[in-house]
Image (cartoon, rainbow, N blue to C red):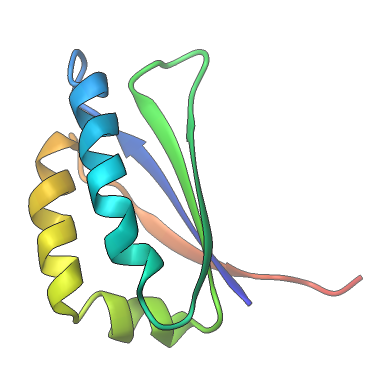
Length: 97
């Protein structure tokens, strides 16, 4: 399992619009092959910063499957104009302890 991590710096004053757009965009990613679950959290200290965590079966489900899909093109149109600067996305794999 892979966890995608992104801190989303939303333009100040656009938080409500972003959240509405995210609600619209969520089904696009949720229907992607390999998608497991998603959480979106809002920072208490920096109210325009959000933490996006997405769990995928495999890295390629995100990087090749979703990101190269028509659904991602719609996702990008709905959400990417809210970010400044554009977020860094990283992927993490679970360590079995």
